[in-house]
Length: 388
Image (cartoon, rainbow, N blue to C red):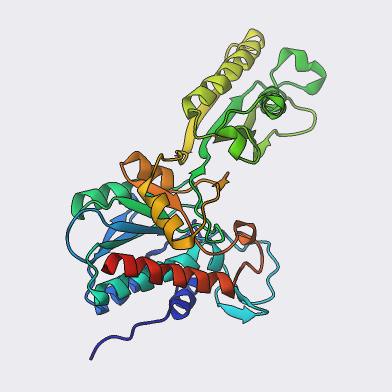
């Protein structure tokens, strides 16, 4: 007896039921998808992280030849901590023309459509392969995609085009900014604040670097943007400090200060250039600190790095999506995805998925039902192309 072929909605409902917050394991979801694909005769492959608590999953349908198309998504979602939900976040609710639940928009809705399309491709006997790629830890720096892609290249015939299904209201997005982050630990010297000139406040020294980020953003905002930069909002690389901690008491110069500096880098600029600029400021501040107390210093630890997606001249992935959607507009986004990581490894890449990024990460996260239907229509058209 053949296994049941679940609908896209049934698949999304199942995927959302797994609370795969980035800080937690996703292995229950991976095992379920693996078993579901196997029940339809599709082999899949896992790529674990270093802890063994998370894994990416990828699979192939169709002839074992190169030149296929990859549907790429991520399995992790952001936390619901501190958010006021009107329903169970791990249950898909239909209300007022919307599907509501954590991840329906970002991006288990697309994942469900991709799984559905892979099974359909298998039964249709497509002439051109379709591949599925589901990564982990996208929400914390696209950490799971690079090792997954490298493993895909080892065990599967190489596809030529990748469609990353981040929510883009089904518009073809052909470029996005990259992201790079650094963790700073400013180490000062404690003295009573009445004698602060004899000590070094890690917080006040760190504030100089944070103010540098403010000044840099202000200068960039009034500079003439390049042609590529002009496509984005805002049309420049941004420097951001999202967290900070440190200090012992109001009357003691802080010994420690911790904060992160993150850049959203334009695809025509390099992260190395921005790190050099940051490091120049760090060195200058550190020199001031050491002039008071030689043991004071600033330690820098590299964090995440996500390459930008560069516009492709006559890119295959873009061409496929434009032909299916009929959308020939120019669309770019400032958020990062694994599209640039695929592109770095020789794939043509584009972003196109159902839903609006404005709904991602929000309480009562939702996707318009019409968008989900548009996503399924897109998959049907893609399957028709692969079949012919």
